[in-house]
Amino acid sequence: MPTLPWTEELEIGLPLMDDQHREFARLLAAARHSDDAALPAAWQALIDQTEAHFAQEEAWMRATRFAPGNAHAMQHRMILRVMHEGAAQALRGDITPMRLMTGELQAWFPQHVQTMDAALAGHLRRAGFEP
Ligand SMILES: [Fe+2]
Ligand SMILES: [Fe+2]
Image (tube, rainbow, N blue to C red; front, side, top):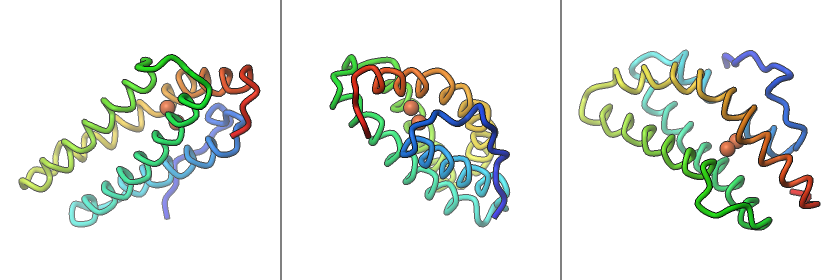
């Protein structure tokens, strides 16, 4: 299975969060290396994992009263909406947007982890929350 280079900058130090991020990177790399026939299934696996990953972070936000309706949760919703749209377009016969999105997600992911997820992890530590 091809993997994305995992770098220390992607480690947040929260094991459950890091596990989700490693799995996201692995599934995204698998999608990027899939041919057109295999891409929709690989994409769906990435969507499923992303829904669980984002839901876990948002449950931690709620558990620690992190500002509801915050920009972090809004960005999660926007990313999932775009991913579902890529799946819908592929179903209609156009796989190009999905293919382009794999590259866009690869650019998006490290900056999300290093800004919003790192800030959430800092908030959880300050709140004394042990996921
Ligand atoms: Fe995350
Ligand atoms: Fe996040």
